[in-house]
Image 1 (cartoon, rainbow, N blue to C red):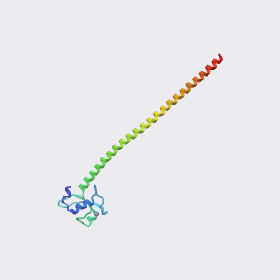
Image 2: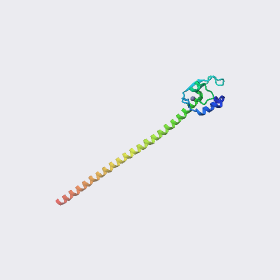
Image 3: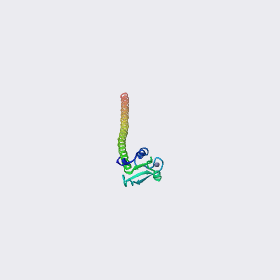
Image 4: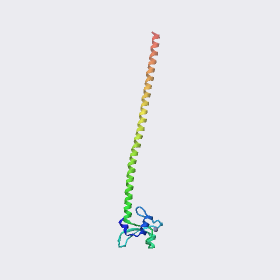
Length: 150
Ligand SMILES: [Zn+2]
C-alpha cells in the first residue's frame, strides 16, 4: 500500500500485530479505536484509525492500532465481496440441493401412488376373479341341479 510507505518500522510492526480485516473496533490492548485526521505533511487530511489509549498518551512508534481509513474500507469492501460471492455459491448450492430433494420427494410420492394404484388394480382383478369364480360355481351348481331335475 502506498499509504504505508512513509511509516517507520515501529508502526509497520503494529500493523502486523494489530492486524484487523476491515474497520478496527478495538485495539489489541482493549481500548476503543477512534478515527482521526492526519496532519502530517506526507498524508495531509488523510483519515486514520488509532487506539484511544495511544492517542491519549500521545504515543508514537508504538504497537497500538493504527490503520488508514481508506485501507480499512478497501479491506471491508474486499471482505464483503468475498462474503457475497460465498453467499451466492451457498444459495446456488442450496437451490440445487433443494431441487434434488424435491425431485426425490416427488419420485417417492409417485412410487407410492403407482404402488397403491397397482395394488388397487390387482385387488380389483382378484375380486373380479372371485366374482367370476362364484358365477362359474353357481352356474355349475345350477346346471347340476337342473340336470338332476330333468
Ligand atoms: Zn491500544
